[in-house]
Image (tube, rainbow, N blue to C red):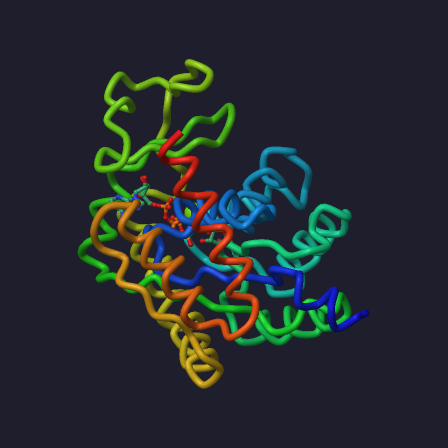
Length: 245
Ligand code: AP5
Ligand code: MG
C-alpha cells in the first residue's frame, strides 16, 4: 500500500539555473500542470524581509547584496512553509537547493515523507541572455507577479495587470547584485549541478519562448520517468486543455 501511495505521488521537482533562467516562470506553470504547489525560497525570504523584524532586516541585506542566506536559515524557512498537508503529494521547488549541503538536507527531508528522490531540471542558458532579462524584469510589490518585456507586453504600462499596482524593479536586480548572484552561482550552485548530474539531471535549453521551454520540461520529465510518466502525461493533457480553453 505504501508503495502504491508512493507511485501516485509527484514527489519533488527541483528547478535549478542561473538567476533569470526562468525558474519562477516555469515553476508556476509546472506546478499548475502537475497539480501540486510550488515553493520559491527567494519569495519566502523576501516575505520574511518585509516583516521588518531583526531576522527580516538581516535577510533583506543579504538578498540586496546578492549573497546567499545560510543553509540552516533557508532550510528552516522552507520547512516551516511546507509542513501543511497540501505538500503531501509533492511540490515544485524554485531556488532550493542551491548548495550541495541543501541538497543533502532535502534528500533526508523527502525520505522522511516517503517522497523519493527529487527530479532535477536544470535550465541551461548563458549569463549574457539572462542579464538582459534581469535588467528588464519588473515585479508587483503587492502580489509578487513578475513581468518581463519578452514575456508580457502588458507590463509596458508600468502597472500590474492583476491589481493595478505600479511595478518596481526587484531590490537585487541591479548590476552589482546581479554580478554577485552570478558569482555565488559559480561558487555554490555549479558544484550542485555536478552532484545531480551523477543522479540523472534533466538539462533543458532555456532560451526561446516560455511556452517552448515549458514544453521541453514536460517532454523531458515524461521520457525520463519509467513509471510515474502516467502522472506527467496526464498533466500534459491538462496543460494542453488549459491552453486550448
Ligand atoms: P531568487 O528569488 O530565487 O532569485 P534568483 O535565483 O537570482 O533567480 P530569479 O528569481 O532572479 O530568476 P528566475 O530564474 O526565477 O527567473 P524568472 O522566471 O523570474 O533568490 C533571491 C535571493 O534569495 C538569492 O540571491 C539569495 O540571497 C536568497 N535565496 C533564495 N534561495 C536561497 C537558497 N536556497 N539558499 C540561500 N539563499 C537563497 O525570469 C526572469 C525574467 O525573465 C522575468 O522577467 C521573466 O518574465 C523573464 N523570462 C522568463 N522566461 C523567459 C523566456 N523563456 N524568454 C524571455 N524572458 C523570460
Ligand atoms: Mg525567481
